[in-house]
Length: 354
Image 1 (cartoon, one colour):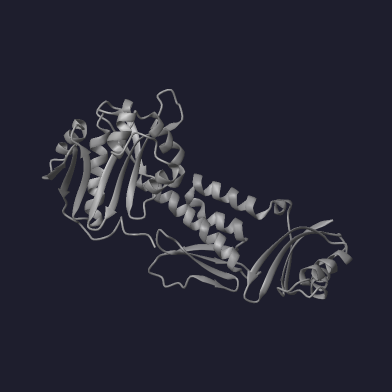
Image 2 (cartoon, helix red, strand yellow; image 1 turned 120 degrees about the vertical axis):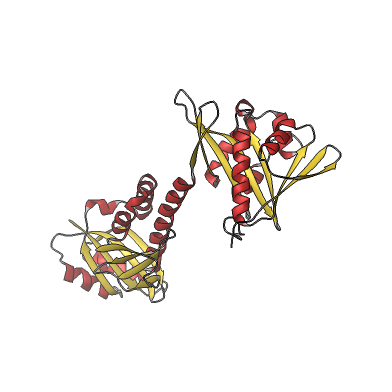
């Protein structure tokens, strides 16, 4: 028996796929996997089959055409083709997380492309697919151009390829955005933008903070925030959240030891910090607040606003370390501190998401 890949377009009508599979079965062809990819011309069926050694390419094409398939493409396959498409995509995604520079090789492996090239943004390229050519937008700038002899690319293949390109760009962007912060005591921690995957770590951060620390952060109580609220903080619709990640001295797993949130509201941005109790008074709060001020400046906000309990002396001391003029309004035990900013450029980092 010999492994073959068969791709054919079949009318998207009840019973038509069964006619095609029956035609293949009459020639002793065993279908191992099938993927259906909708297109404007009909359903493109991609088969991996095990066929008798005596059957050649022309006989397989004839069997497909007798089964009402059209635009048939047939090619020999290898044992690695037995891996289902989701498994292959996940494997390539894992490779890109470890090595985002391998984007071209991953695209070639995913689509069986004969050539993959990157073009700068200055080269005018219309994104999409035309026959056996594909152009993908690179979020980092420029585009990827792919070609293969046959078969034509499908919209589903385009979507998978674009998702891989965007994954690689995200990995690169996160690596570039992450900085190493050296605290006054010499300990190094990583500071980076938060993402949805940080939810377990941020949840643990809150659990390991004292009720007093949580109360000073959220003002309304010391209870643990609900997961849906933490998710909104990690990926605000208009704002930024930073997390501080530390690795234990004994090589223990990384843990989130602090977070800082910047939430935009009109032309002002509200800032809030939470530092784990055993990491307080080590300069983390000051470093995080300075980074929030820089982000708010760059994003074009007119002022940074913080709501602080009057008894929260450490936070008030951290604000004074900024060395910026501010105004304070008091409402009972609550202070509202407003720090005027000098916007550098309007609406770059914290613009609302579409």
